[in-house]
Amino acid sequence: MLNNLNIELKKYFTKKKERIYYNIFNKLHFKFIANKNTNNEQIKKFLDKGFFKTNINSKNFATYISNQIKNQFIRPDNFSFYFNIDDEMKNEIKSHVNNKFGNLLRELEKLYNSRITIAKIAIKRNFSIEKNINKEFYSNFYHLDSCIYTHFKLFINLSDIEINQGPLHIYSKKDTKKFIKVNKYKSRDKYEDNELNDLLIKNTGRLGDSFIANTSECLHRAGSVEKDYQRDIIVITFIASPEIINKNGYNFFFYEKKYPKSIWLRDRKIIKIVKPKSLFNIIKLFFEYYKNKLN
Image (cartoon, rainbow, N blue to C red):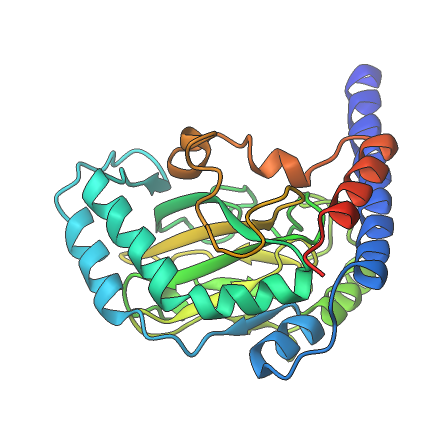
């Protein structure tokens, strides 16, 4: 018992120290590297709240992906399932990101003052879970992604998504602090369960709707899918790269050749770039961002 307690305390204080380091990095990057001045209303929302629903129409793309995954065999014994992404689907995803989201991603590049690159792409289905079971099946406990803030995600609905299908639940950056205080939040499995319903955003919507969120600064969870329902979604994880990437061009798939498994499978080598593990690495990464900033 004492050994288990020691392990839990070590994990808690390690996470707490990591979060302090990340907060220091975020403040320094935001003050000395990021470009806060913008006329783009969506970027203003991203700065203020940490998320926004895009005005990009992805209905045709989402319909295509939804049709492609219909024939895949799904193991019935799991609460969530990751679909295989074949070469044809990869090409369609690349085309859609470059052509439909390119302008928006370039606005985010101005904000971060670094090139935006894709770190991971997943097409996922969540299945129903029984009510009142206090267990995490598919990130359905509130948490912050353990990364610095140069990491964010794009969610595209692959069907109409209502409350009973377990949409993304998320709090703004400001309301995240309120939730942490009210619920005495310590970690994803140690907090009181008092939902702040007036402040909570549930990402319901139509087929092809898309939502961008800084999941490192906004508390969030996957909603619990109710009986006889499911949720299909594509999640694209981005990072602002600290590396020099052709300052006069754009390549949102810059890391694909170097880390192909990270983008299309569940390897996390690219995401580790924004998960520094020590104060020394935090400082080193900050100066790398500063040295290679766009402006």
